[in-house]
Length: 206
Image 1 (tube, helix red, strand yellow):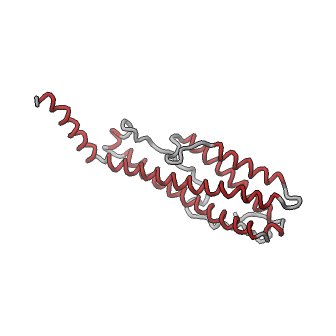
Image 2 (cartoon, helix red, strand yellow):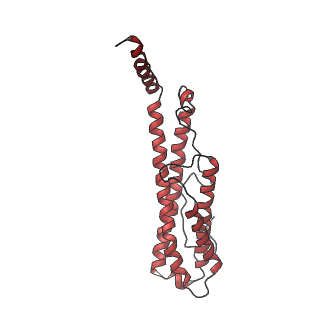
Image 3 (cartoon, helix red, strand yellow):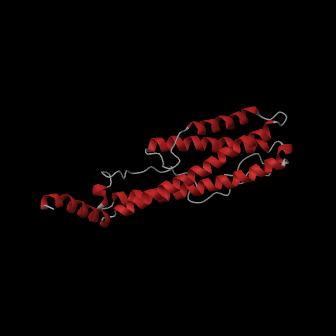
């Protein structure tokens, strides 16, 4: 084979060696890690959304239950369903991530208001199905906080790697773009002790 024909192959081998030595494989691994963490976030959010219809069904039959509170939960869940995201890859921009987070946080707030309202309805609180759903929501809300934190940690590792030398030279060119975080929330540095049993106080814990 002529030397001129060997040159492209030699160049390819050299480029592969340089990229591997400069951390290309690490970038791939870190990007896959963020995708995996995002899938975990999506799973717990979907689990919560799946609990809402049964929760609504359980409380809507109560006499004189506050319909406005119930409607807010139903509408918030619908907004969650309307947000289309790839379950296997996080939103690519900060704006898209903020829209996703805002919608999910609105559902969190609506559910919190609903469960506070239930405190005024002893018959609902005594319902075994409601108590089971309540326990599942407690666990799911805690898990959401945990998975969001894990996702942010994986994104931080990935973003840092893309900006380090020498990977910063080629990371953008090869498609390793910076990924957005979930915005920090008060108390986000630790998993909250979610407790929807407010002891009849009528107000949620701070």
